[in-house]
Image 1: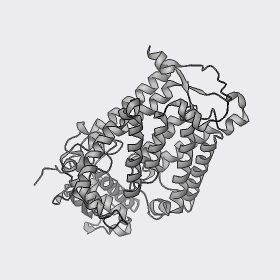
Image 2 (image 1 turned 135 degrees about the vertical axis):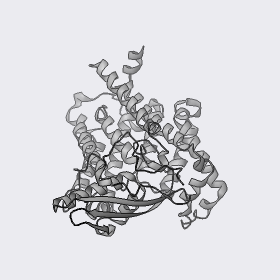
Image 3 (image 1 turned 45 degrees about the vertical axis):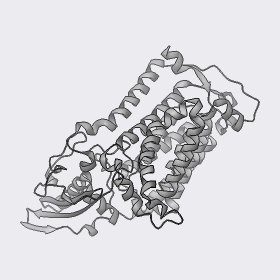
Image 4 (image 1 turned 180 degrees about the vertical axis):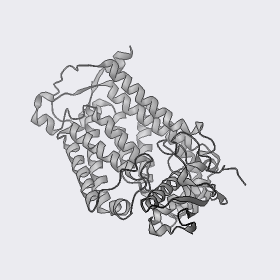
Length: 436
């Protein structure tokens, strides 16, 4: 029964259309990052980037290398849209996007992570079997069918994203409207809607509407009688986010996913005018391996967002377990930070001039995120070791979460240059959130 459901041949029109949408969005994201100066600000202007811990070796290409890097990704997006050398184009983009994602986290966004996951998933899906140059070149590759697991995998991935997004919002500062009020505060000067966004009633509507939307949208879209309502609501929700929060292609990528919930017959009729619907029987090799890989992947996707429950203290305070967990726009966090070095070689203590090393955005992250602090301490340690000096690095930081009073964040007596980092354990030099 499970095999029949998993490997049942179904119409592939939604997957084909999504490939075209995805490729276009990839091209827009890549060329847009170049054109708007984002690549320059994030990769070229900084002396170094704060990579994900363990990927410190992954640094931007020298000179104009990152411009070429993003242009190549944009060209791969075009190849994906037109279906030219689809699997190689998709794999090439997935690889390059992963490098860009892991290379820096100063401009972290959940949609960067989602795009990376979807890119790798799409590498394994037969998304070039129609409306592609690959079929023009090799007509025998044409097929209007795909196995049902392709659809199941994408829907399960989306369900995980939205469900954890909803669960993460269920905490006091979100429920009482504090977080939304802070998020809207700096949007008061928006043309036409700025004053409206400051309305307490609207903010409460958005607060609880966000939880309900994230928690219920996938079931609503799956249930045929409520599907139209879900589609209309999705358009309003994602276009609102696009206008107010300006988060790149993410709202439009989310709208693109709606194609998987529309009746295949309607998608077929709308986008495929050809009467040629010849299909080939699908050959299902490696059924057990396919099921094992999909189930393992989905288990990992469920476990990762839960890992912060195994780590001491509140993730909103410690940041431990915050990334890769669909914790989207949940809190406003500000901080002040001072870094001191004690040079054992010369028996000197002095304050580090952060402007010498970091951009303004990197300094903001350094003040509130412990992994940035630890990585910066390791960076300083390496720099001075190259000179033959032995140093200790001490950081004084005070942090405010959601407008609450500032509290000391880091044990300023702990030498961060002499500590190690763990992805799944609490770091005792992060002071408790309930400390006086």
